[in-house]
Amino acid sequence: MESKAGQSEFDAKSFLKKLPDGPGVYRMFDKREHVIYVGKARNLKKRVSSYFQKNIAHSKTRTLVAQIANIEITVTHTENEALLLENNLIKSLKPRYNVLFRDDKSYPYIYLSQDPFPRLAVHRGAQRAKGRYFGPYPSAGAVRETLNLLQKLFPVRQCEDSFYKNRSRPCLQYQIKRCTAPCVGLIDEADYHEDLRHAVMFLEGKSTAVIDELANKMDAAAEGLDYEKAARYRDQIASLRRVQERQYIEGEKGNLDVIAGAVQGDVACVQLFTVRGGRNLGNKTFYPKNVEQQGVDELLSAFLAQFYLISGAASVTKHDIPEEILLNAELVDADILASVLSQQAGRKVTLSLIDCEGNGPAG
Image (cartoon, rainbow, N blue to C red; front, side, top):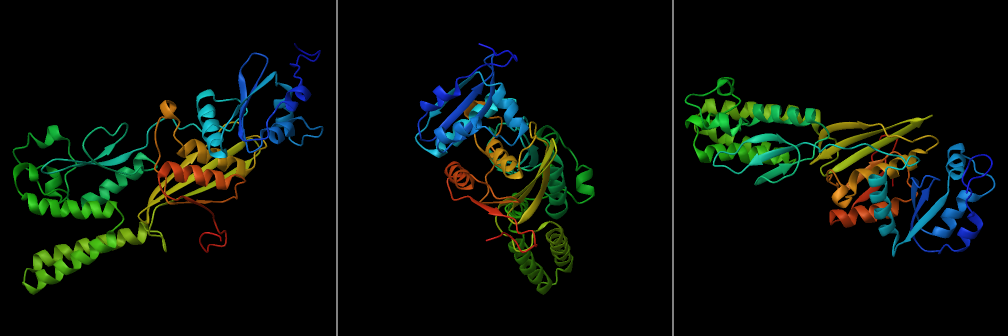
């Protein structure tokens, strides 16, 4: 039934009387039976009742309430279950009044193959091939930059197998000292795997350990009067130290993401910086939809759920969850989000507030 103003009538008073006090998810429908908003609640009765108060501050909320023709609820056992269900519904239904982040493509990884002379390559999509995957990286540019660095530091091949298996002489990569030409037998398997081991250590964030190993090798080569080999080790060490100065985050050795959000009018932006093994892998920018009159805390809560949490068959990609996530705003539901992220990651995940004075995470 519609009112004279053309809006759907909804008997909120009768509906609210029947609501339980426990956790759950609510779905709001318009007169065309389209879901226009999905929300979660610690207490369904209190949360849904708040939409029907006489004085609603935000015009966006008033517009939403005016369009409600029906509300359906799902009671859950815990708040964690409510958060997961809400996220799944938002991703699948894409309601017009929920903050929506578009993330419809898989993120790139660095793939290390399983061959006698393994190769390093950019990889997207399902991880079906045997080998190791490092990442995810925030952009293809970040992967290409890392692979370019690795070629200079540790000359492990990056060519396609079809190219590698049909060589009769070394290619240009060998001439410019970015490959050791295993395709034509110019390096034995043991020496190749030593370069490969150092490349893997670099990808794992263990550059300092690599430098220590190379320094010992340099000293041994110098003592054996093999000054040419000692000079190669010296150049590798110098290159690694330059990379550390540029890419490594002071005081950070583990895995973390730094996420900052900002809202101005009906435009919002979220910036994600990815740090793995203390190394800055790059950043990615997101511009969500439906952000009118949203606070930064609400923006970041929506981002964390939609970016990290898996939505079953509806999930396009699974993002690596680091041990710590630094945010530029306190979240009302931080404890629930941290609990669900920890459960999904299989280890403790901490949400911390960025100290704007530059002193690291706030206490």
